[in-house]
Length: 193
View 1 (cartoon, rainbow, N blue to C red):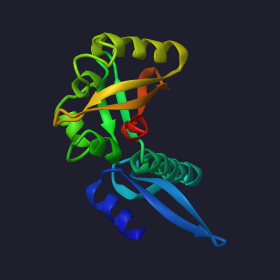
View 2: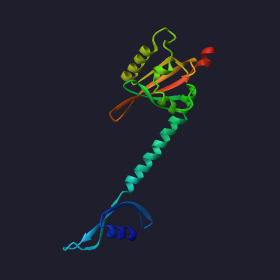
View 3: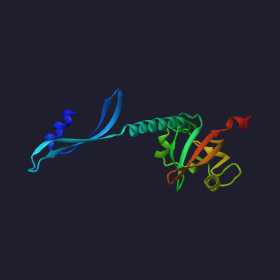
View 4: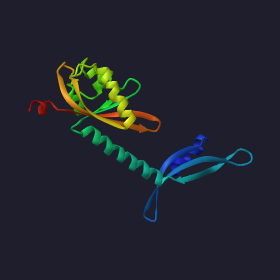
């Protein structure tokens, strides 16, 4: 700590550091602010320090990071294609590796690079002859209204191959933002059987 106090004395400016202090075998995280102290004539006479115990904040921060990592892993490692769609045009904001493989892309980031939305990975018409964009907008509206919507869909890989799948759209809310999570499963094999 003496180095920090010397730094404040040399610069004449306050400084702030996160520090670890061990007392009675217990480590505490501190946020310490050191500032120069002057006498009545303005002569620098020392350094004062105010420290706040931020141990619980740091522990909560670590727990949050671990929780986010677990949920990110659930998303990334799922064998189901996972897509996150954002308004107003419901473009794909993120996707997992399974989604990239299902649609014939090299990586999940390619969805974003290509500015793909559900209509960009669907044929112009669904199996019943209706326009994909119109039917898709109906599915989005149902998911937003009811919280989720499960349906069969005809998708198209980047190479143009069409395939049947099931889609589960789930409305998600984070703060004041609404988005959709889409889980997509290729059902080509069961359809052939």
